Length: 311
Image (cartoon, rainbow, N blue to C red):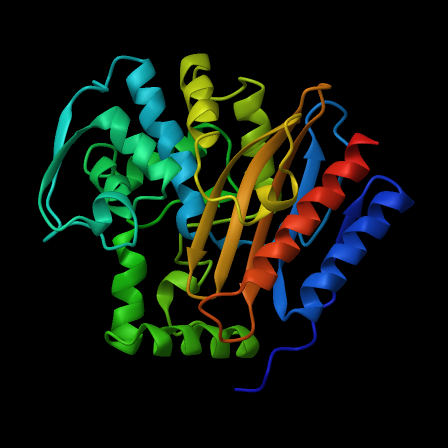
């Protein structure tokens, strides 16, 4: 198959200055071998900037945000006990580098603490344990009922690794190579990297979800308040939050990482009152398990967008 045609981003911006910022961010990403989409929107004025904001993208762990909201709504309405103990067995749970997914022995954890682990350290085993209580179909149905048509949940977290293993065996380096090759060629050997089959969403849909969570316009106020609190506890700060560290700023976010995908969504809030929701969804076209320069570029994008929108 021939290589995919050169991509020309579709820019979004409410004035020339904001369009200039969006174009500069896209150019910086392209220079690093990064494709993707970006959107930043002021929650107070509605002004925004970005590019390719409606492009569906596999979400990796970013999908844990709508999953958390569905669980927290069930808790808020009394349909699910936050103290309910759930036993997670490493022999049958999802794999991953953090939280219960890294445990070697069974552990029993309350539902509310599974949500904490899922959001704070992106624990895949905690997420899939919650999907034993609130199913994938339940979450996707809630997204439709909430009017979040640009976000889909189609599979458990462990399915990411099952599909990668199906294409590359136990060779994660080969799976990464396949992902990068297919990104260049415009095809999908690994099913969960295909937006038509993956847990997927667009930057526009994710920012819209964040706006509704921060403005208590979705689910129930106790659920949205708890989601905001938990997103503020995320321990990973190398992407959008990387250039937004200050005593006068608060960042609440959720990363997503799998093979060549490096994402983050979240909201930055200033003591002076400005609030900006952001979604950065990236796909690298170079083979690199670690790419601090890409994380830095995402952080620079967040800072530049925040400064442009607050001004």
